[in-house]
Length: 390
Image (tube, rainbow, N blue to C red; front, side, top):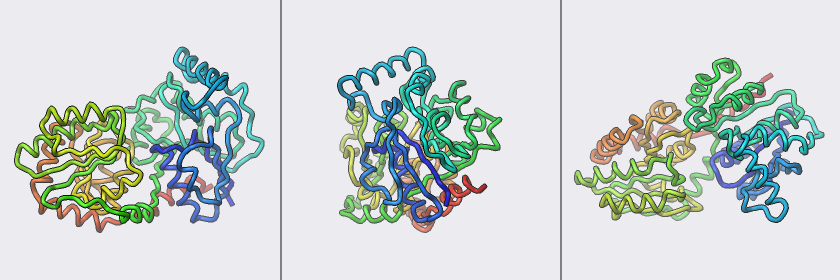
């Protein structure tokens, strides 16, 4: 049995944590792994539903301050975390991490494989540290770091981060596209960089979608988006596309599930564009799949993405995709014929949405292809297994 340590900051609701949660459930079906999950802070909603076979331990040294936000600490601990964050802003994360390493004990236990499931963020952001912990405080025969983003567009392509990534035996990117972008930044890592797709709990997704599925007005074309409402998601471009389609006579409603810092601004923009009656903001929802299930189209108007899990989730529910051309869009959508990838511009998105929603026959054809495309974790698990092939 292969003894594997996976390290992450926490198990709060977020893209990386959800990917890890799905992975743990997927590899739980394979009995050749003895998995220990080490969290910088043992917190987060996903902790409530982990496989019983996974042993969860918590960091007790200074790295625990990277596991929670400033407001979650009190008293002396809040002051200490604030001090590390200030040093990070002034001198960069490597300086703060070097100080943290002085008080961080090495794990006594050794492993066959140690996995940093989180890569480092921007140099002056107090985020990450997981790769440094794995490199300097874990004993393992092989060390692997996961990459969950576009290495260039996310702003993490720096000399400091590049040096850290180069110390790992393997870099596992969440898609071929993300791997290719990483290798363009670090060509010397080409032979050590691989793709390992995200796993999904497809049975859970389908089960939740059946739980009180949202009933849409079938006299309209119903477009849905599930996203964090932050700048990179490009919701303003989607609003422009909806305004264009409505102006050209298409009976359309855009259903937006999610919340974030830009929500109020985008609600005002919908008013300004005259489409407030055609756009519904539902906020954060515990079960977003009930909104996806009966939609005609899933739209993702992002400026940049890595390998959005929502694409696989929508496909699993038979809902075709319209997405801008981000890092992994073509391999996730075009290659499976489950939707349309347009150029990453507002003009292209506006035209692509209109062409789809104004042509029910084409939309129905994509829906049929998406429903028959299938969705499973076989490729992702084979790629995971290949990480430990030696």
